[in-house]
Length: 149
Length: 417
Image 1 (spheres, rainbow over the protein chains, first blue to last red):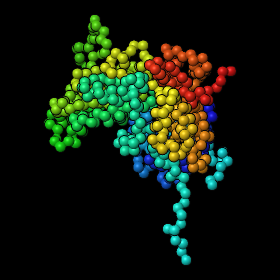
Image 2: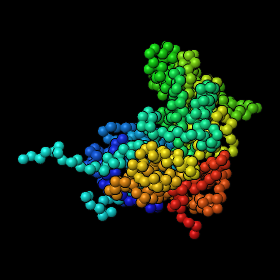
Image 3: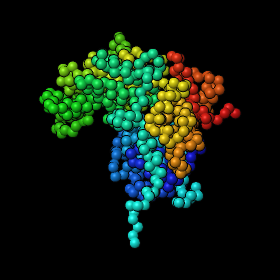
C-alpha cells in the first residue's frame, strides 16, 4: 500500500475543528482491519469531545447505493458522517463515484476503510478520489505514541 | 479582588488564521457565494484557442442568438466544467426574459441506473416551480400537466380491483412481434414514456415559450457516467426530445467521448467545447495563480509556494484547490502561522500518492514511457483509462494537443528498474 501520512483520531478531529463546519469535506481514512473498531470508537469520542456532537456512524451495508440521499442527508445538529467500509461493495463505490455531489453536501464525511479496500476505491472511483479532501493512514492514539497535550 | 476579564488580552486562536482561507477553497460553492466573495476568475479566452472568446461567452452568445441550440462541454474531472456552466448562467441572466434551469442530475435522479426521461422530468418540475413563484398562478392545463408529470416521474399508488389487473387474464391471444426495419437510425426512436414526458414538459413550458422567453437548460453531472454509451442513451432520448422546442441545452459530457472514434459528440451537438488542463506555461500559470491569490493565498504563503502549487496541480483546478487546502492543514497541524515549503511539498506528495494508488504494472509502464520517452497512444484502452482517471493530463498549446503525466504523480512515480 502507498505510504499516506499517518494521523490519529485526535489530530484528525482537531483539523476538522480548524476548518469549521462551513467547509464540507470528504476524507478517506485507511486503517488496519483489526484496529477498525477501536479507531471508529476513538473518532466518535473525539468528535463528541472536540466538536460537541455525536457523528452519524454507518456500516457499509447500511448505505444503500440507490438511496444515498438518505445516508448523506444534511443534519444541522450532526454534520459528520462516519462510514465504515469494512466490505468491498462495488455497487456502493460506483454509486459514490457517480453521485459524489451528495457526499459533498452533507458536511463532513469520513470514509474508514482497510488498506486493500482503500486502494481499490482510489483506483476505480476517479470522481470520488478527485473530491477527497485528503487521504490518511489512521491509527489509534497509542500506536503513534502521542499524548493529548 | 476579582480579575477584570475584559482587560485580558484575547488568547491567540490559530484556527482563525486558517479557517477563512479553507472556506474560500471550497471547490464548488454557489454562484451567489462565489460572486459575493469575488472568487471566480474567468478565463480570458477559449482554453483551446486564444483567438476565440471564453467558453461561457460562446455558450451564452449561442443561447441568446439561436434558441434551441444543443451544446456540450467536455473536460476531465476537476477541470472547471461546473464553473463554466455557472459563468454561462451568469451571463445569460443579463436579459430579463432569461429562464435558466441549472441542474446537477445527481441531485434529482439515481445515476446508477439508466434513467432516460429523467432530464425532461426534472426540467419540467423546475419550470413549473418557477412559474408558481411568479405573481400569477400557472394556468390550469399547466398545473394538470405538472401533476401528471410528477406521477409519471415519481410514481403513484392506486388501488384497482384485481380483475382489472393487466396480468390477471392469462388468455391473451396476441403477442408482440417486432420486425426490424430497413433503415438503421442514427439515434433510436423515442421511448413511449419519454414521448409522454416530453408532451407534459412542453405543456408546462408553453406559457414561457408563448412569451418568447429565453429558456436555457444547463445540465451538470452526466460526465460522471464516465462510460460513453450511457451518455449516448440520454442524448438519444432526452436531448433528442428537446430538439425543435426552442429550449437551449448545455450539457457536460464524459471526456472519454471526446476521444471516441465514432465522433458522437462532434456529430450530435451544434456547439462542442473542450476544457483541457491548464498548462503550466507562463500565461496559464498566471491564471492558476490568480485563482489562489483571489482566495487569499498570499496572506498565508510566499509567492514561490503559490507557484509551486500551480505547477504541481497540473492545471487541474480542483487539484489546485486541494493542494492549497492540504498545505494549509499541514501547516496548522504543525502549529505554524504560515504555510511553508515543506507543507506544500507534503501536499504534493499526498496528491501524487492518491494518483499512484491502485495502479498496476501495465499502468506504471505506460506512465514511465510517457514521462521518459514522450510515448502515449491514445487509442490504447490503458492509456484512455489513465487519461479519464487524470493520471495523464491532456493539454493544448497553439492548437496542438499533447499529453503529460500529472506532475504530482510524476513526483512519486517509481523509476524504471
